Image (tube, rainbow, N blue to C red):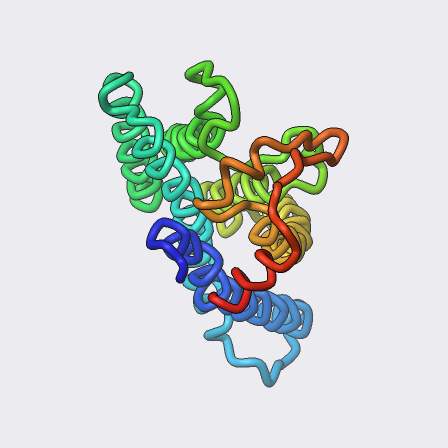
Length: 257
C-alpha cells in the first residue's frame, strides 16, 4: 500500500500529463496555423485559416506559461514540504522554513504581477523576480548550505540529462515569452517574433525531454520506506550495502504485497 507522501508525489507528473502537455499541443497547433495564415496573407492573399487563430494562440500561450511555472513550483513544493517534515526543520531552523514560504508566495505574486504589467520595465522586473524565485527554491539546499541530499532531486553530476535543470530552463523560457508578448506585437521588424519562435522551438524539445526524464526519475527516486537503504548506496560506484534476507523470505514478502 503506497503511503500518502509517496502518493502526493504523483500529483506533479499527473497534472503535467493531464493538463500541461495537452495545452502544449494546442498552443503548438495554433502557432503553426497562425504562421501559415500570416504567410498566406502577407501579399494580400486569402487564407482558409480563420483569423481567430492569432488571438487564440496568444490566449493559450499565456495559459501555457502560467501552467508551466505552476507545475514547476508544484514539483518543488512536494519534496520541500517532505524535507521540512522529515528533518523537523520547523524546530531546527524556523527562519529557513519561513524564508522558503515567503519566497514561494513572492514568486507566485511576481507571476501574477507579470500578467498585469504593461510597461517594459515592469515586465522585466517581475519576470526576473519570478525566475529568481523558481531558481532559488530549486537550489534551496545550496542556498541554505544543507548537507546530504537536501530536498530536491536534481542529478547534479548529470545536469545535461537532468529533469530538474531542463525543467528550470523550460520554465525560464516560458517566463521570458510571457514578458515579451507586447514587444512581439509592437515590433514591425519581427525581430522579437523571431526570438520568440527560436526560443519556444527549443522549449518544445525540452518538454519532450521532460517526458522521458520525468518517467526515469520516478523509477529512481525511492519510496519513503526505501530511502534508508537506497540512500546508503554508493551512487558513484553503483554499489549498495548487502541486505541480509533469504530468497524464500523475499518471495514470501512479495506474495504478501
